[in-house]
Length: 228
Image 1 (spheres, one colour):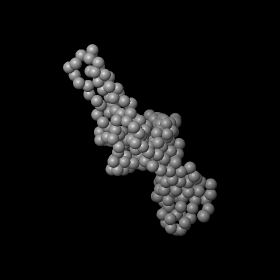
Image 2: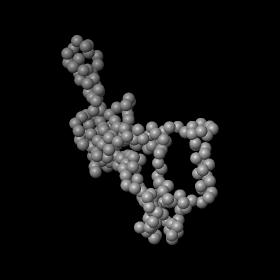
Image 3: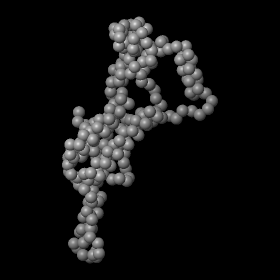
């Protein structure tokens, strides 16, 4: 997958990310699965108290109906893309033409120069430092620059391409992880009940999650409790 493809992923999946941010988290990563049986009595008591505090009928303020973690991801991605677009535009975007002053509007040559300058400044292919500066806007503009689309720009050099690619890859990976498109691997703070080895949870890419002991190889799934 190219850097331009990563930017396309951000553009295409941004609406889904916005929709996910507008709902309360329904699942967590890593998933609890059967590993909760290994929790101590103190940990279970703490979780019970937390559930009581956030119950719909509990006194006090109610949680905001948004997923704050997704909002943080969106802010991180958008900041990175807009900053990259600002940086790149400052390097490769040709300044708009300027018309000479001191000549009347009745001068045909002067009038044509003013109109040309205004048209060049308003070229929609330009990156603007004001107005709409969203993640999809920046991602689309950066993708076009990587693909050498025509416009008031010079071609990117290799260093500039690599810099944009790094931002694109990071943003696309964050989206895939947040939306469950990327496989994740997380350590579990509980020892294996069989050998006391390190447990990890793998999944998050649309496949059922599995708990695996890195030492003895035993596995657990959400539907089975036996060893593999």
